Length: 278
Image 1 (cartoon, rainbow, N blue to C red):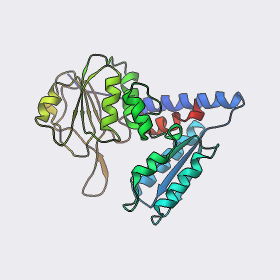
Image 2 (cartoon, one colour):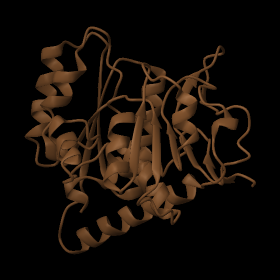
Image 3 (tube, helix red, strand yellow):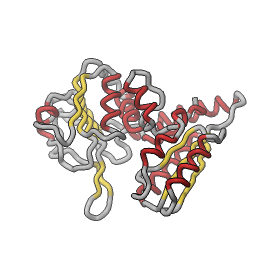
Image 4 (cartoon, rainbow, N blue to C red):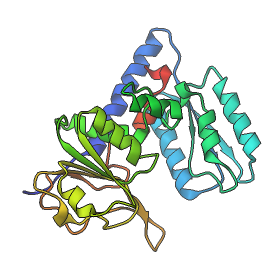
């Protein structure tokens, strides 16, 4: 069976258009445009690219984008003070602190300081807890994007065996919760997992979320499995590349491998989750 590519770029365009239409309707009804505050500390090149992309996505959707670029020397106190200011700003419906932060800053208290209803990344313990309790509010963008990709591809999830390779707080763990919420029997594999091949070979749906190329071999995947690979790794020349599953995947009918196009663009889900965009 020839592998078929899920077109995340096309799905992202649809999501972005839907968000834009909702905002137009809101403004025509007398409401204001929602606002997203993006905070970036330092000059990490990848972070700059992501921030610029988010700003562009906001413009396309009709969302106001407030960018706060802080120097690398910013203190923990000053960053927390900015988050407090944005929490109380009525023009700001969503707050996003771009990760990673410089090493002298502790990201956890910063993320927990963001008001849960403005936490568009879905990282606050309140939002993760609601997802775990089957009462999702604001959901982590990448897992939510993957779920949208599967739903828009008319893939019936209930009753399927799902395996998630990777257990990060950003992707792996919330991805497992999303799949469980959709009715999948879900297995999470991590660095202490034995016999990774056995877990992968049973999966009807496989989500790989680790930055290590070739960690899953193509021949492990059973015929008809749905494979989503969201791992990105940095090559020797400094460029970013999707974590390809090697060798090729003759058994998988649905596969997405393009960096930043492998799910319905997570920027769409960042800007589409604002309380002000509903």
